[in-house]
Amino acid sequence: MSLTLNAAGWVEPARHIASPNCDDYPDGARPTLLVVHNISLPPNQYGGPGVEELFTNTLDPAEHPYYAGIAHLRVSAHFFIRRDGELVQFVPVTRRAWHAGASSFGGRERCNDFSLGVELEGSDFEPFSDAQYERLAELAALLRRELGLTDVAGHSDIAPGRKTDPGPFFDWRRIRPLFEA
Image (tube, rainbow, N blue to C red; front, side, top):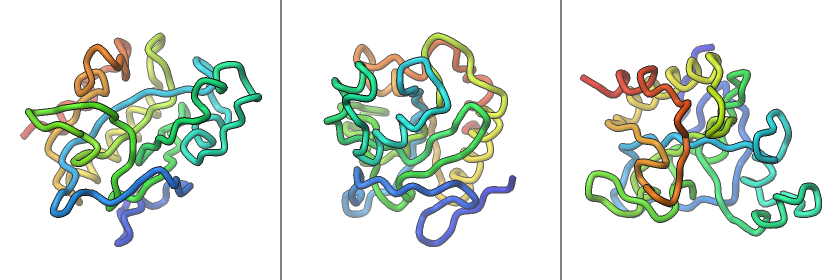
């Protein structure tokens, strides 16, 4: 699949599910950082609708015991890459997604103000799939080319002590070279 970016900030042919959990970047700001996360809902279970429901404020707290503690959250990411490599986009790259929380990178606070967030379906406890790395590499190359992204970091890098994702099984050797040179 060859990815393209349309004028409205949506990647084609990703599946688009608009999240209300976004707003405008601060005046003059543009994304320069790609933040890699992992998520699975329920924890360590893949393939269900939990992530999409969380990012669209439709997560039913009665559906799973874990959901009762997170259903009130108003969070999103720009992208979600499922285990099979499917790319889902929740927020156009022209808007700020609410993925990083309290964070800093390169001496700058509030990473949401200058980053794009990509969630990989997974956990800190097992490797990611080849299909995910392939889609992430394709997406990163597109975003570098079209938006001029210059850096990539894990959620754990921008919020140390608070976040651990993408976790010890994420193979940075498969992504970091795309941001060198």
